[in-house]
Length: 260
Image 1: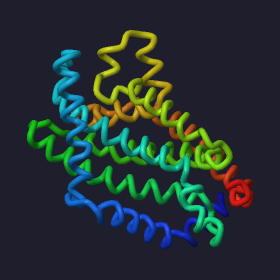
Image 2 (image 1 turned 120 degrees about the vertical axis):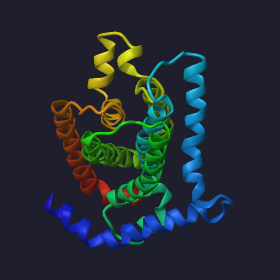
Image 3 (image 1 turned 90 degrees about the vertical axis):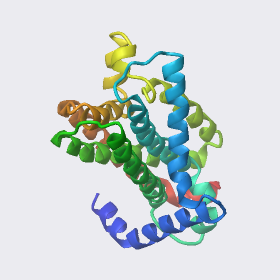
Image 4 (image 1 turned 180 degrees about the vertical axis):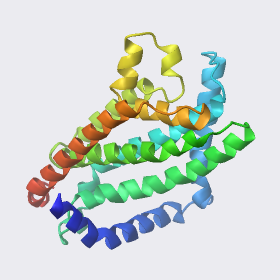
């Protein structure tokens, strides 16, 4: 861990510069520029809201905001993990010439997608004002919720980054797994209302993504506080995943160039 913190401090300036460059590159050839970061989740919110209301007859209060919160958290996790699978291969020209801890590529993705998530959260605030959602001090629980989501995402992304170097088809496998997880995480439906026990508790308690979505909705929309004990358990698991991912990368990163 001491080596990790030392390297993180050493390469932090490069990581931030790289993330800024990637954000600029994404909008350089787009007519809508950064507005697309708002329109993309907003359009998906409209689609999923229509499907849920018209087909499944959802009766969830503030449902459009409910869906948008789920999409915001999911997009951060989904894109960060999926982009990490091929991060080493996609940056092969840099990896083969300059040394830096390869988890820096994961942090780069987290910074890029984290910035987009913050843009989406501005829109969440606007939607909450439009729908006149009452707020309480429990809204501040969203800060540790996002910190835990980032921690869990970093741990998972480091692990898939490592195995993505050696397994060519891992990207396709992770894509399928994430699609399955998307439908099991309650992005556009309320698991606590739509799914019966014991599957209800399994989906909410064992899946960190659905648990964090549920927690964010509880504190932002319904003035409740999250299950702090459950969050503590998942935080410990996330730390463990981070430690495993970092150790594996440090141990095998010198062999990545030979495999590519």
